Amino acid sequence: MAEHPSGRENNRIAASAVADDDPRLAFIYQEAVRGLTQQQTLVENMSSRAGSLVFATAFANSLLGGAALSNGLGPWDWTAVALLFGIGGLIVFMLWPYHQYTFRFDPEELLDQYVDGDRPTTMSDMRRALALRIKADMAGNWRIIQRLRKALQVALLFLLLDILAWLLAIADV
Image 1 (cartoon, helix red, strand yellow):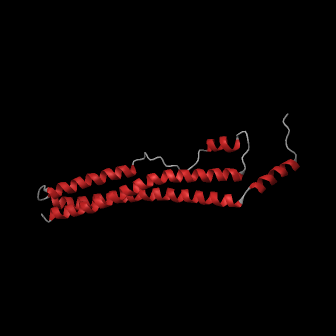
Image 2 (tube, rainbow, N blue to C red):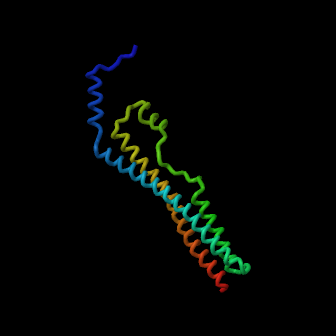
Image 3 (cartoon, rainbow, N blue to C red):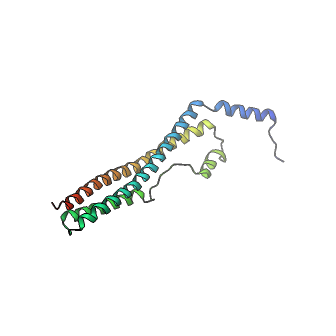
């Protein structure tokens, strides 16, 4: 039959765990998690902006395109249609769910590494390792976010040029 630690041994184990819990590492880990949460919110906001771009593009093209195409197809009409396809491609790029973001840990991996391993890990060691891992995850996420941000900027520029092309087509310039 397995021996259970006595009350005194349990108190010693708990005391050593508390003594090892460095508040500085707890703060750093908390800040790392907060940064990762802010990054996730940024990704969600960019998806929302892409959705708004879909609406703005559809509205502008239905309103101006109908008026411009009533007098036939000219070079500005073709330019506007090409820009519309460019905007559509950029929106698909922004909204397609293939991006490999890392916003959370795998619980099974955490259990294997920090709880069920050969050597028990202290909270301070665990927070330190996870804070460094969050930093690496944030760097990987940031590369994806930068590509999406640039795609959004180009799509907004295309939308402005698209509206201008439709206006020039309406003016029959």
